[in-house]
Length: 514
Ligand code: ADP
Ligand code: MG
Ligand code: MG
Image 1 (tube, rainbow, N blue to C red):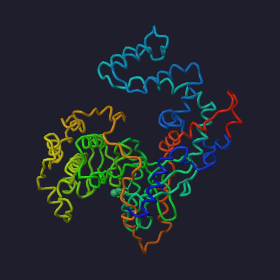
Image 2: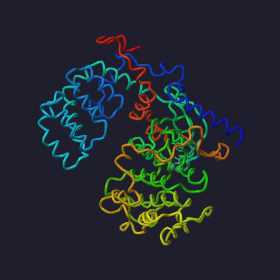
Image 3: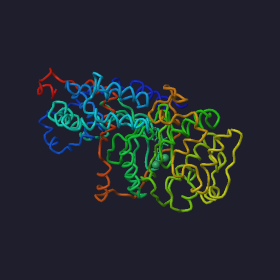
Image 4: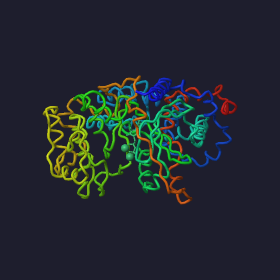
């Protein structure tokens, strides 16, 4: 490894380890300073007073609303109920909740829910996992408690956080570390937020490249889908901003590297069965065009959604998208297709992870697109001895050419894939809740990424001039912080805990603008 690479890697490793408070700028408090409450007046007028958005969905809003409720004696049992619900509801667990909170004789009885006691028990018997409690909880909290909250110092504080959230984002908000990879429109760099110490990956789209290749709609599509998704199985978008030359998306940093890197660059090509099973199961939890996959801390997340299409159940699109190697026959054939192409993609992925090579192409071989298309549509894939009976069976069901016959494309959608014997050992409920231990743990002292000098340099586009006609697109892209992701960052890095101090009880004013 060259010295340049060693230096770049060790700087990244040090930054990652520092994480949290160590990675913060010494001016971090100033960067996150609350404005005086009088400066929040306009926001207070314009912000939508929606209980669900303000008190449930937004992480900082939720915290402040809970702090408010805990400060009110008459709301404390609701908070205890909410705490108890943090664990996933299960039948016997649900019963214990009923006994504790819904039975008249219990001293923690929540009276408002009482009339629903019978229906609660009934729905639990039918479907032990339904969340019957949150609905009742929120039904109560969104009324009078929510009204009182909006008149409290806790809501003032929420507005102050929202003002901090609205501050514009520029390149100066980040420290830049090593180059991680190269995409179609620009480079991807490791970066760290100066104010909080959080590490992310910054995907840059060079404005001239986007313009030359007319990639505006695709860039905006990727950005808008990522910002709406809030999934543990997809990289999250946290910031979108622009510099003079680039549009930037700041994304969850996948420090475990590209899944492709694990399949091909560590030991023999391919992954062991446990990892194949685990990653395949995680991918089952999403329905997207699987273009590239990254391996996160220990879990994988889908990234590179440039070609993702937002489909509602049963809807269809037409058009050729995706990496050619993973393109389904019906996509190549320009037929209408729905989710079926994703199940084909999953088949390709399981095949590639197991075999250490993709299904329709030998290692090192680069057939021309028409030849690839022919093989995908006509050829039967082959299974070597790395395939157990179960994997082979699952792969061949997913790689069924006719989408109508393919596993996953029947009525129950993803469920039938999850019920395949290959996944017998996977508990999908636990997996979805993030409660399953991953089979492989990346070494925090390693950088799972090609050496910096092995990543090709990004070419420069000549003869494209940017003008005012581009600014409409830039302003749609450049929306700054994504509230839920940013609020999570503030909480996870401990900044919320350190900054969200209130003065002596009852005093409302002087402490709010410290
Ligand atoms: P494009 O959409 O232009 O193909 P990608 O999203 O695939 O760009 O990113 C290009 C490369 O950058 C990836 O193959 C990967 O190596 C690296 N990369 C992208 N996103 C991340 C991330 N969130 N964390 C770490 N590396 C990333
Ligand atoms: Mg890519
Ligand atoms: Mg892409």
